[in-house]
Length: 213
Image (cartoon, rainbow, N blue to C red; front, side, top):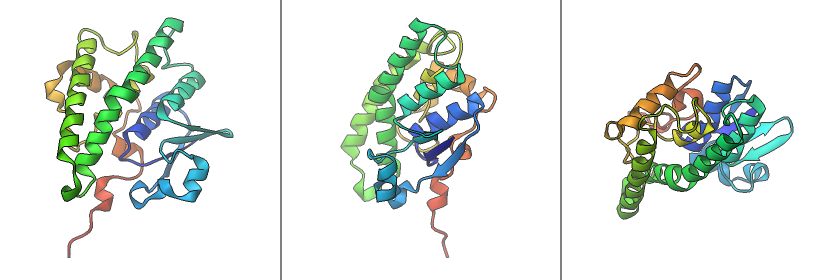
């Protein structure tokens, strides 16, 4: 399998992490997002939505991280819930993550770190960080007293919701503020095969730092 991705993308990390934890044979394909690669005609031919991640798997071209995660869980026969009720609960959390959690975390992180300082819309960042705190409050309460988001073991619900939370750039999420989330992130990081996003996928902010003379 080939995953079109770049290291700074939390949505791509969700998929890369699942591929790694499931033990699939896969290859990352770097997408130079910051040079406009997702707007190119070649990339839009692969994904008209102009986004990563994109997974190529035996002739299939899959886009949108939630769909890809569901495909991988079914293919692996794990991480998708152990029965129909758990599968639906996993799906519920995937939708919540896309709308409430990663949507705000990802946008706040991008605006606060990857735009030039003079172009950062501070009121927008503050609004998204406030929404992120509300989402963290819900997730932290849900994880209090349980190890995983759904059921007795890790699932793609966990891998989706953690997608942005290991990144070092400041975006309004402080692990120490959320003890249940903090413990949950440690549990995920202890799974065999776990890697940090900048170690799992090509591309990081350090690659774009211009050397000083």
